[in-house]
Figure 1: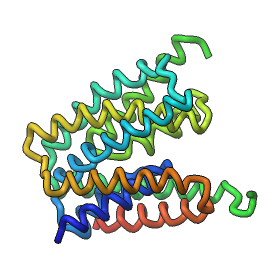
Figure 2 (figure 1 turned 120 degrees about the vertical axis):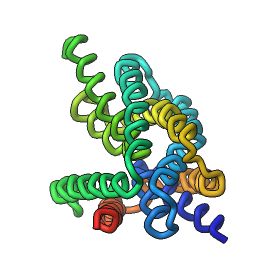
Figure 3 (figure 1 turned 60 degrees about the vertical axis):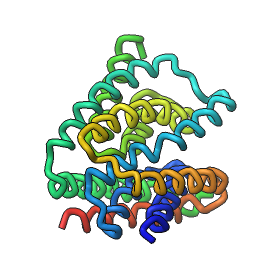
Figure 4 (figure 1 turned 45 degrees about the vertical axis):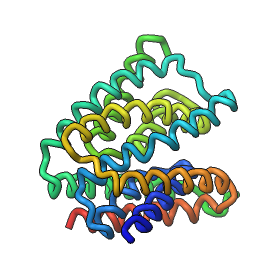
Length: 125
Length: 120
């Protein structure tokens, strides 16, 4: 039965991800808050669940000529290297602490989102 | 922007994105898209496309750390991945068809509620 809920959580996250918003920032809290999945397991699931969709999106973007890797290597290489350290830090931290840090991160993103919403004009279009 | 300065900004952008995405297993896109636009001057569409190019190897690399430490649960991950692909395809086709302001408000509200719930 939980299979259906995991599938639906992924679907909701993918929906947002496809619209250009952070799918993982939704998938992880849904998995941990509503489905009782442990924080590290939820984070690992999101990392892996993102990959097939990413491959597909890259194909689409590349067909549209939107992908130019020139210069991006200066971003990609440090990002990959430090993400391994980030992963090691996550593995070292207890799930409950990691969950609170994640919560603080989400609140920060939400506040930032609220500020940019206020700056944008809802009736402009 | 001269090449050295641009590369320095790129490295900074990579470090911020990679550390967030490694630690939280998510959120790299939320960090990198505004950085690409504001710090490196990418236009919107190219920023989104490049973000995936950056995040995909980051996710793969940090996923390995989670995997070898025993945090991979196929029963959670496989349905979540299948759902993600289906949702992603629908989401991409709905893009620019739903009122952006409303979608953003809903997204911010969900993040705020989830964040507070996880904190307290």
